[in-house]
Image 1 (cartoon, helix red, strand yellow):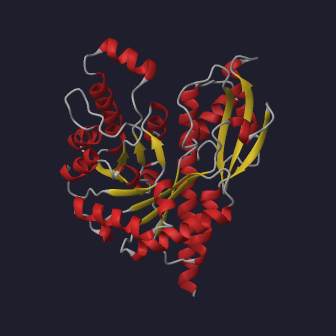
Image 2 (cartoon, rainbow, N blue to C red):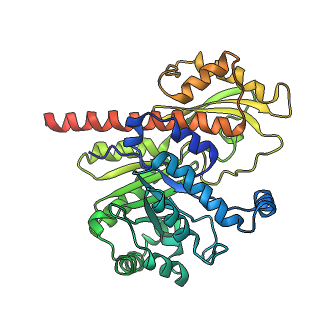
Length: 373
């Protein structure tokens, strides 16, 4: 039964705290796709003052944080935000470096093979030279470029076939991630057509393990909730499409993925006038409560008022549903305020618990219907 959930998340402090607080049964049904963000800007400047090997230290810390939660468990790892060919102070490619560290720490790490990077000789050689641990596997990630190339199937197939031969892949055991990315401006029907086309094509090439991913949450709060100090609903189109596809094809091996509570293009830089907000995941949607600039009245303390809106709404699940729900309740009672990183943790923790539960309930119902038929 395809009830495993594959959230694409950044391997940063907020997300890692969210994972560390998940229920054990949820962790068992969740295989994260960690995107290791690039060390740059002020973070790099500070790191260079502390160490002569800032990049290796940074990657070591990311690996340790992942291992603290996922030792003896599978994670899928991507470093697509780093320049192709970028090497650490010791001259090693970023992907192979962090995969080696994770392997040493007992994580079953599964590297991503990016369709968009395959033309790079350095990248291909890195993939070909990697020795995976037992139970580990590669994951092919098809991004917007690959989705465009579905219109030229011969070209796409040529690249996929080169991946298979170069990395010695088994189609039956290699997952393919169809990453549609930001779908805020796409109609549900258009997303469905992409999924149907990509799924059918990859199944035709012999792949059995296919994951669809997309994100409906906008890259700025103004696009989600127009008015300050108000709330609104944002449809989770990716979940609606996955459920629709599976309802029409109950025997399909299509798994679900999304980008958590972040847009794929969202910046990690905290804007001076960032609005305080809570992104609360509900069935097929996000219930988003928006405050105003942190430079305005109450600053981060306005999260207490926003939390009361969540708790008093019809959407709130109960404090024992997740650690994130507990923190929202505590905030509504004035016990905590929380920083931007804290709220990434709270929102992400509730989101993963909610989506994992939603997937499990849907696939259970689907199996029950199929059994009756």
